[in-house]
Image (cartoon, rainbow over all chains, first blue to last red; front, side):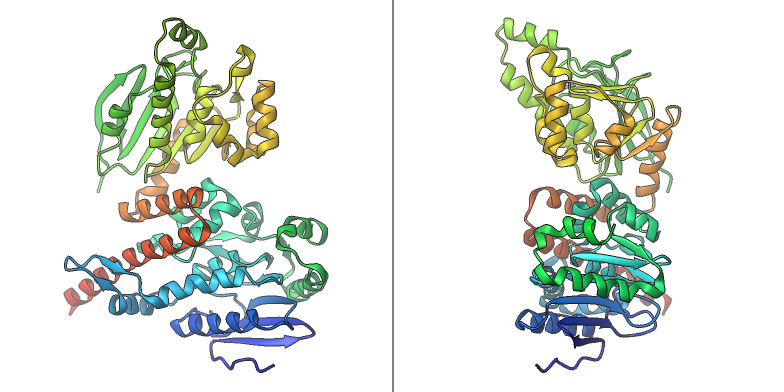
Length: 229
Length: 261
């Protein structure tokens, strides 16, 4: 198996488990390059039989601060087709590919676990919401700040948050745009378990080993009850 | 910019309307129990007119006085049947009113105190956020008179509380308190009874005051899509709305730069 080389994200295979690390420290900003590489790695994993679980984390102190907004805006301005009145005529392909890669992630038939420490904001939280399980360190900070700079989460985050936390929480969190704590995230079902920061990767690994034996996504609640509560 | 106020209150069918700081306030205004005079407790045309102001940023629904609403008066319904009025049409109009509220692309908050029964609970369930006082009581009492909730309660309740709890609530006609209602996801926040209106109004203000309407509308549309569409279609639409806002924001930032240059 030859894992594609990437510069902003790293995939390591060890004893049946894939370790995907967002790797643009310090804040692991999700650049355009990141989204391309992420999509290619998830596509690669989908076509391999050897992966039995996937753990996603951020290199260093943080999961990720989310998308590189100024560059993203510039790219959208350049690549978006508009009509004569300057209105949107079509969504550029690179943007559609971003949400499609999250759907591909969710549809992997192996357990996908996000291990979150530090900040997990915007698109990074959306990515985590498309994992099957989310563990976090006690100091983790969450948020969907898009509304505070006149945008909205655009990768299915509103949809997912509505399903996971309910309509009222989704509405409040998205419109407020403010950050919230690990305890709040647990209350909203955004994370399944809070663990001490130093034990995070080991907890994720132990959990992955439990559920990878006989993983069925529809048994999600059952695994959480059995192994994470 | 300060929010707009329309101080002239309008009252139709025992339902009142006013605008404070860009928030529209619908008051079920038939005290003490605020019974709904008819299923369309406000005519759909009137509601469309009320909610058509393009600066409105949210809607608050509350009851006058101590209670939210005791729901419909079943005697009225039975009288209508005796008089061979078109009951089906009347109920359809009531459903259209709730669908209109639920599908608005600004947030609708129900501020609930005291009793919230039957049709009153169905109004609350069509709102996007439900805030209740610690003394609030909820029930679908229709079964006691041999009928069932008729304004979509049977459809909206399972989405919040699940089927098992919905069936129990509807078939027993039992009353539940605020804590049980929160446990069942029928309400989102519980506050003390003196505060329920202010808390709800302030929350709406806090959520919407600094947000441009296109952002609020996009969030509400995405939530509506979450109720109605498959994940693939909803995500496609979410990305399209994001792109639209991003395009406008990119142009706005470019404009700022040019002005600075």
